[in-house]
Image (cartoon, rainbow, N blue to C red; front, side, top):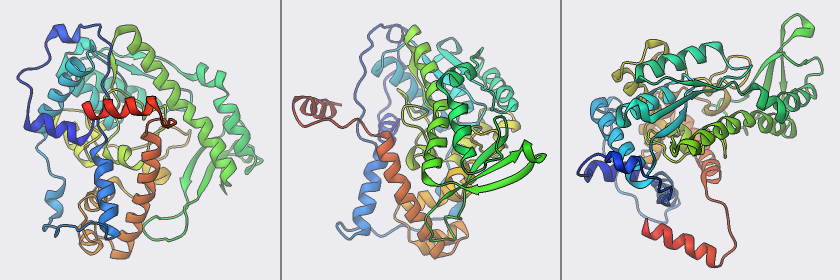
Length: 396
């Protein structure tokens, strides 16, 4: 869901929620969404920094107000957008989404149930042998708040069939010869993105059974890192396959659950958790999603948790795997980046030095390029097909 679409709903609300007959329609045509407002804003920012276009003087900003929203109003706005998208634009009977027990999917399932009714929401819990048992319980708790009875699909056999665990273990053993199948591990960023100008690289951290559980750390060469990530991305792609299979069988839309940090900075897998028909919270900063979670009555076990990947067998935060900063700090810096706030003022808001902010700005530039590539449409050779797509986009 783009910011532009949500803004249009807020300023020009539909006369009524999507009627039941629209949700029951078997018309499976989908519309081509307009280019993301976030990408457009990024392009404007880049042009301003290079002096191609003039920027407007930045208005004074205060830390306590830049991310402030009214949770009740925002929930109503998102619910209205969900009804309009599912019933009038996508013309589907309801939605399907994966629920991990994290704040994003938990807020999303509750909002979807409030918008469409719990009987029009299919929530799927998809554990695998390396996911935390707590995730399953948190997912059930979120679904209970939503009034949705979740389905549970263990994706371990599918991942084994694809060779997910085997391929990854073989790759790790190339840098840690004592690593054995079943040993617990995670991947971490080696450098602090705010304090170092060095190019980021990654370490594997493993608890080695062959050494009585001793922790070992090794730098990952690029080829090994790519092999591990490619194998691990199967988890996200298999989950999305399960979601779309359920959606196709019931004429429902797949609801994606990324927040703005993930959507804008490329923290998703192409063809995996980045794939969806509707992304209702992709315009919200992580702090704002937590605010909605508290407003919706989600338990503290969900609203008070540190965001994790729940992808590797050792506990791992999103900060140490990808973002490099606490989400609350990155929220403020990303807001400043999008609003052309100077590094000096952004540093004051985020309690960082201007030099550190500039490093984070550069890291955001890099991640934005990754996100655009991951989220973009397939490239086609110029001709009738490309002209047809351009015409559709203009009509959207």
